[in-house]
Length: 348
Ligand SMILES: O=C(O)CCC(=O)C(=O)O
Ligand SMILES: [Fe+2]
Image 1 (tube, protein in one colour):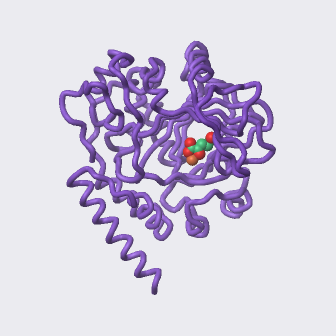
Image 2 (cartoon, helix red, strand yellow; image 1 turned 45 degrees about the vertical axis):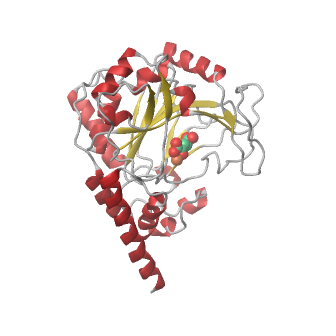
């Protein structure tokens, strides 16, 4: 009885937050935890309904750029695969030159070692050392990435924007630009480093683009996804009711045997597009390391607060400037200096 009342209260408050968001664009700080509660109780169906209510009409993107070679049939079958399986993989999306440039960027840009489950690691801003890493994970801040020409080329790429849009069935909003290393520092998988199974649930609907910048084999920490686990009843209630926690392989095995898991080994330049509402993790690195660049697009800012940082007037490329003026809502989570948009970005 108490649980029923709690669920009704949660649903009611969530509805209030949604109304306020639609009116003012303000996201309540508890929006994400209310969404999570709804998901734990009822699965993804009601979340999808909210996503549909919050989504904005599609934008007119030209399909040229990194994914531009795909013909219509292949494009549609890839979008279809996203819907049925929850992922799709493209090889050779970034050429060697781009991967080299990303590598130089990673070695020259400061970031932070992440504190691990045992409390080790964690650092002030520093450079990453491939020879002597100090933790199992090293993260870069989006503020430092979005001012780079290379990154600006990718976030201005309309084939990527169109792919996100076609999957989301709504205008996309860029809400994550990140890059990180996984290393062999630890002997066992680390929860903090997302090396245990989990689902993401910070918004109502989103899609992630993972770009491998190093060659990834089965020892260097391939990304792992469980196909179809993104679907409306893909995460069984038994697992959902544990909350927003990391799950061990043993927790997951009764529902999804290991031979159903998809392990993505691949050359540098490989792109994995994935709906991380499904179960996923980065495999523990046994040998070597893995550098990954990632973008996320969402159909609504409702959920976890997000700010990608500021692009300075000095560093913005003319291409990105043009895209921001043409599609301000896609870049509404980036601050510009000064504003290059002609109209205020929408926040809904
Ligand atoms: O590092 C990985 O492969 C997992 C990353 C992850 O959980 C995420 O990006 O949501
Ligand atoms: Fe994740």
